Length: 214
Image (cartoon, rainbow, N blue to C red):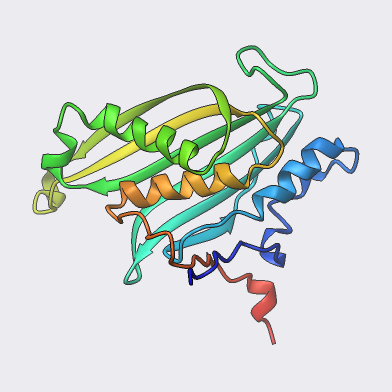
């Protein structure tokens, strides 16, 4: 028998991040979308955290962040921003827009591959498709960065990073599949292969300092 997937449930950790921009008049559609962010199925290597949402991109916004860990080593980080404008915006094809960012360390020989960009972009689109997260008007960039040390840092090893910046318009208010796809993408960027379908997933959540006070 397959082990059931464990969905991410709402916790107090999300209270500050999902404040709806301190606007109690937030439309019901936006509130439902925000609630669905908390129901995403994510892997055990993922740790979620609160992020302040940018206020100038849309009338209503929310944001979450995530890190990918293996053996307590952080391999990738990312953030996902939800934008909502009842009037829509140019290029959105709807009232909602998701903006994603992913950064991961990679080996130099991988980042030098000319096919890396198309491959990374396919990771995103295939993750969205596999999670049945309908979308439209997707666009983004894949960037490879090389850091070299000089002077006092001349002995530091050369490091290479991959960055993906993307946005797309979800076709439904339920965004749980989009969050799961974003997390799947981060794991692929971190070099962690997909989980078998019969393995349960359970998110790690960064502890809320308020909840650990005596």
